[in-house]
Length: 224
Image 1 (cartoon, rainbow, N blue to C red):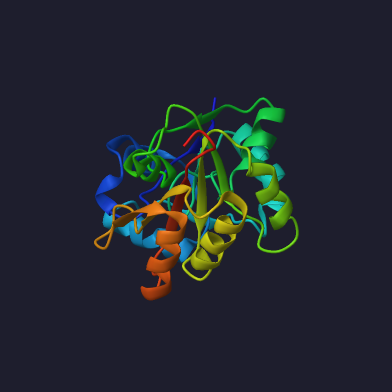
Image 2: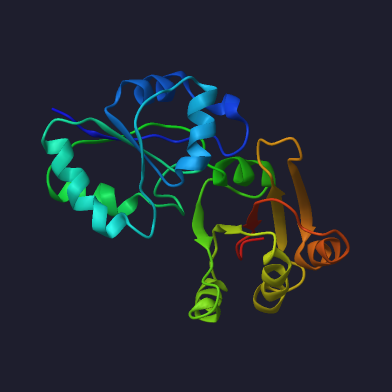
């Protein structure tokens, strides 16, 4: 029976692609990509000449049912995102849910994601943690932060370079200036960097150093 393969792709370094992921992408009938232009670079690097079709957050609702029908008809389909594991702060959940509802087999390959390296590298407790992804930009942002004030587990957030300083300043307001935090950027890329300290120290750092790249913020819970 045909199935949906959820295939992680590198978050930076193209060498992080697994042998199995390359094999699957070469063997499926079609590859669904968040951005075909971005994914074309990866596929060319590994000499993957498969059919590439667009599947992103703006068309996922409309396309999920059709993809399920195609798999039921015998097509093996792979889903990839621009970087990391589909469904983790990227399109993928709706399609996987539709497959599960229709008893279509889903196989998610293990692979790259930005949150785990940042969490382990932080030096903060990681036996239990909560992943918050991107905070709401406007509506619901303050409510979300209030709900996390008493969170005992280490918290992991994704953030863009344009909002990382604003987010750290807000964290000071809600979690206090002495709460420990680790900020990683450009994971697995040439300019990978992790800055650790208190919230007040990192606010000062990014006030003086312009944030660049994609960021993962790892914030200590109330146990620290």
